[in-house]
Image (tube, rainbow, N blue to C red):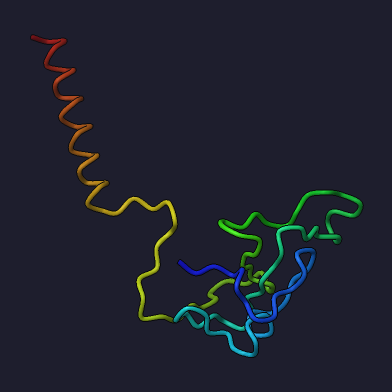
Length: 116
């Protein structure tokens, strides 16, 4: 899992910085090359433009105190790696298939009980 808490030059928890700057001059972290538009942001940063005087933090990292965001707000940002990328809470396809089969069997039994 890639985390951003061990960067060589992280921004303050109340700020943000480009991934390459935060990572000591390289946008490659843990075998993943990040597009230059990605920024690392601390978990205490409050976006002032749309939240003047507010206390709503900009993001909520999982885990740690830093997370990545697309500073340009544009599509098609790239991550390049030879590793497999998954979401932290992703159900793998085999588990999903097994779950679907259990639901179908349970539904079939329930329908059979009603008509039996």
